[in-house]
Amino acid sequence: MRRSNESHDSQRIRGASKLASDYGREAEEAAAEKLRANGFRILWQNLRIGSLELDLVAKKGDLVVVVEVRARGPGSFEKPLASISRTKRRTLLRGVRALWKGRIAKMPEVKRIRIDVAAVRRDDETGALAIEWIAGAFTEDDA
Image (cartoon, rainbow, N blue to C red):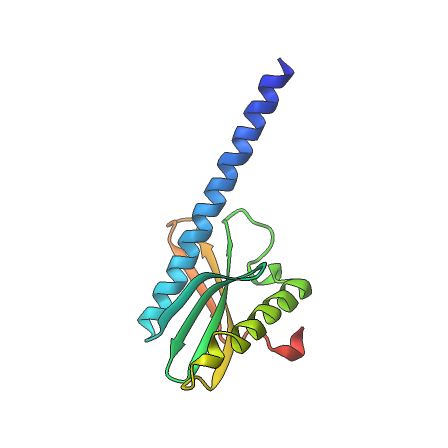
């Protein structure tokens, strides 16, 4: 009997993980759409650089923007922006440096790179996604 409860619990956890994963993908797509609406071209989505992952990388003119998408559900205690720890900032900066030295260095028209945060929350009443966009959310000095 114990075994079937454990199996049921692990199925419930997998189901919750899938829902969170679906919500994360939906949040990233909403952020990508906002970038497109503002004239950016998406270069990469979920770009892997070694063990690091950058959610969105977009370009407009001489600017490349790396966007960290943070999504939280309506019942979450932690706000999306509060979920970016000092360790996460350092990891993200490491990824951006590697991106600059590798792929972006091959784009002579690019002169600047900026790190933005898209904090995505689902409205409790309507279920619609709301995005709080913080351009230049942090820099090397903040790590």
